[in-house]
Amino acid sequence: MHSFINFLCILGGMLLVGIFFGYTNDLGRVLLGSTGLVIAIIGFAAQATIGDVIAGIMIGISKPYKRGDRLTIEGTGVSGTVRDMTIRHTVIHRFDGLYEIVPNSVMNSSIVQNDSYNGELTGSYLEIGISYDSDIRTAMKIIHDAVIGCRYTVEYAGDNPEGN
Image (cartoon, rainbow, N blue to C red; front, side, top):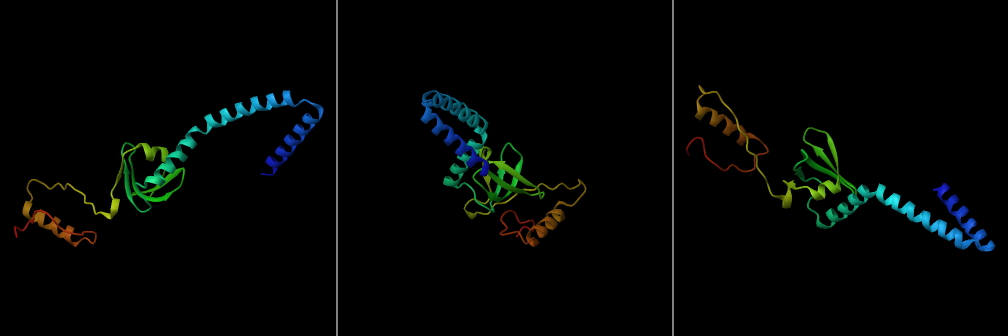
C-alpha cells in the first residue's frame, strides 16, 4: 500500500510539471493510451475471478444452499457438506474427510443436488448381496433389525419382512 501511495504522488508530481511546462496534451495521450492497455490486460487476466465473484453474488441472492447442507455436484464427483461460502468459492467437506474448494462459477453452472433443501429428510437405497444358499427371510430379518436399530433411522416404511 505504501508503494502505491508513492506511485500516485510521483504521478501527480509529473502531471503538475507537465501542466506547468505545457506538455499536458502529449502526456495525457500517453497516460490515457497506456491506462487503456493496462485495464484491458487486467480485465483479461481477472476474467475467471470476476466470473466467480458474479456467480457468488447470484448464489447469495438466490440462496440454493446454505452452510450445513449436504450437496452433490453432478458431473464433478464432489459430494459432501457445505462448510463455508465466500463471494469467490464454496468449501465442501467431503464424506471421506477431505475438503473441496469449488469456484462459484462451477457451482452456478452445474446441477446441484441439495439433500437438505427446506429441511426435508432423504433416504438411500442400498443393495445387499447374499449367497444363493442363504435363507432370504432370515437375511431380510437381520437387515430389518439393523436398520430399525440404527440411530439415524427416522421412520420405517416399506415391506415388513415378518409379514405383519
